[in-house]
Image 1 (tube, rainbow, N blue to C red):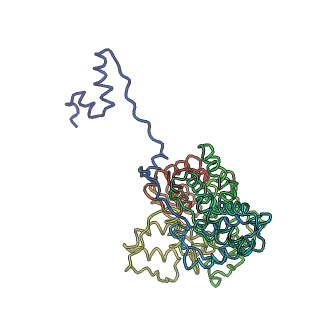
Image 2: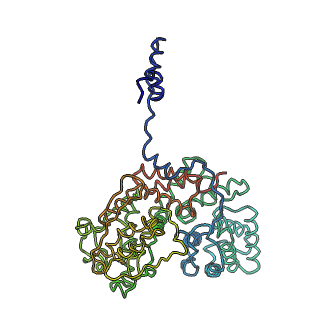
Length: 557
């Protein structure tokens, strides 16, 4: 280098503006009788903010498109139960088929009334109306009903306002009230009241809720905002949370009142139940009858064991989510302490025996958090083996949010049977082709680290008579050096401690509660959710709070 031939001021310029201010600038300032303060380098940004921008880089915060939602089956149940508690007898799920699922969530664009579910729905609503005809006083109670038209008119309007969650025009209310009063005179009080219920419950204004601008009618706009809040957080109408649909204005007169309404909803039991449904949907935990495990290959598996496996997961989530401030860390890295009833075939202990030492301090440790529970493992296994590729794809897509392409159409993806080798060895050999290795570099480790658990989640040390190898190289997290883990517990801890896992959890919360995939314009909200999640030690409710207090719920007016 020829730095000795460079004049001091030029050298300072090449070194940067800070050096220029300290050397050359200092000489000039001294000659003028003033000495400026040295320039300070900007403080480094907190790493969590760097991560937030890495995963959610978008800065253009556009308002979300207004949508129309059909109530889900859970929401139909809760709404009818809240509106007509004396007449609700069975869930609509018994007669109405489940809607198509997108990434295992009931997305709003797939919730329609179609030939697959219309008949069952109308039959269900008709049965409710028939029960009303047998006891109409639980809906409308007017002395001298036929003659007291003012009372009939007022109570019909009140019922419709509650059924439509406050989102109804005066013209629509008049039509309903006029129909009811005329019907009472024509067919009698009992028949007319049942007809009122049937007409209202079959109305699009009951079956759907919308975010579309209501002609700048502030009362209706706020009613839509209120029900968007309660259905998003708790799958139920405002009345389920002791909020009044017909007077939504009172909850939005100030920011303080809006925050109080949100607090009331987010801490309610219905909101905790929906949060539990999120975890079951996110982890794709099957119902007992839906497991695809073959009893011929796993003799311990039967209907009783399947029910116990699912009950254990429900109880685990109930215990964690009932806490005042549930943390994701407690769900992913907690250790169970007792063997649940009827799960001795899996855990190898009597139901009353403590198993903390066996599960947490064994050689090697066997269980850590919800990802090691039998129901979660078995939901991605079977019928005859552990299906490491299926387990790995689930982890890659749903737990880590890694984009994975489908294999080429002309690729032979059949993994042939090979005698005398483990499932891991068989899959590793079959996926070393150049067309496979790109995706399987991630899929295989995410499946192989779970090989210590058989298809029903039972701990094992051998596969096909060969020792289990659950060690994996985790080199795709994009943070820190690659890590070789030796046990499932070590892998679960490494993966769920990563920022990749945390940002995926935030995305999955968004997708579930919004009923849609995220878009670039959602990045500012997702970024704030991620920051809140990181800064509150993984507080789930506070992260959801950021979402539901944002402009993602209802298009701003």
